[in-house]
Length: 327
Ligand code: AHR
Image (tube, rainbow, N blue to C red; front, top):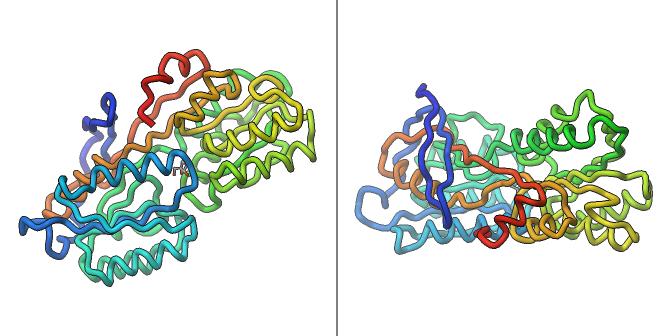
């Protein structure tokens, strides 16, 4: 095991810091592409297109896995249906791609198909979310510390509202996804022992439409009892914002809103005073993922995980950086 180290990763603007942990072997040599001078054929199984974050992530991946960079990308977006995503990975195995990149919708249920990939000598690299399957079944993971994101959001909430009785509702991300599970754990740990009471917590599937619908239900049920909303991503917060306005309440004032992602629309709402705090979740994972895939296919050793560092913004900080945000 290697000690943690920081590797510089270049994004569209500025540098992204990656914390790399645990050295691992290449996890499979790939079929053809890597050493032969041919393009590397990569099957990328994306979750779907549920959010602004996801669009930015897809764009980053397509840019990094371009022909100019030596790749032949086979792209699939599974519309957030786990069975469809498993079928996509199976189809990549049948096509004999050189490597598979997977952004798993949910954590569970991957053991069989990951074993099939291993048996076919096709390395799998995870990006964004994690799986519960054995680490031996994939070569590396490039992603975010979702638990820390939840903790950062929860700590801000605890510091600002923890000492007065405050009623909270939560819009959770996709049930069973590591993003939703870990953010909930981090957030709940951070607000433990405060005067914040969770009135309700339901999934909004990381989408604006569901965020709006679920918030409408919360408002019908609890009305002006609600003081605070924690949404697991900006898009659900933005949907909720519409529901709050339609109910004649002022988002950011009557109901304080804390979200995760820091995409342009979320940061605009924060700058306008309609959101109160956002924890960043950086979607620009393409360049690092492509670098890891190249190494794995070439049989070089890679670290078991590369974690992107996130920032957090309040309203004043958002105003300062809004124009320079790359997504
Ligand atoms: O897995 C990352 C999460 O997935 C983002 O926070 C959310 O917007 C996306 O859909």
